[in-house]
Image (cartoon, rainbow, N blue to C red; front, side, top):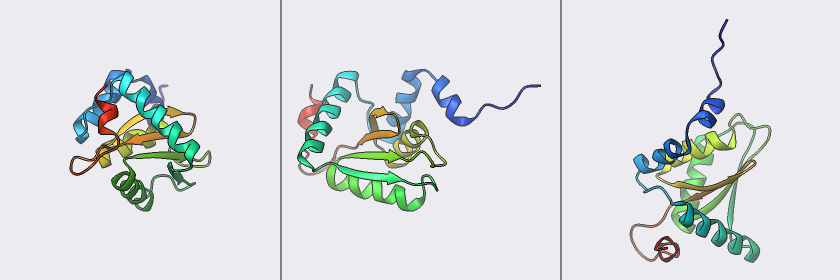
Length: 134
């Protein structure tokens, strides 16, 4: 008898290029590996300076409040670290895919339960636009 696979396993089985296409359909062009590397390095510098915004996903998973918080943080800062707790209903890869699709952002990296989300401002000054010119 065959069982249905959980959605988190199905996302992991998907090729990397298809996972990146989710961000492209959401409004922001997918990041190249070099651009993603630059974003992770920039986030590391911000984290060392204590200026990186961190949003935590609790045991209820991605609620409307968490999504709204990430959206506001991306609007204000363009780059946000999202930490998905172990007790959360959603895995980190699921959270990255859902947030990218809902908010028009890109996932620049994922390590364990931590996801780095990026959304470059289309209007006004942007600190990330010069880094994407790489």
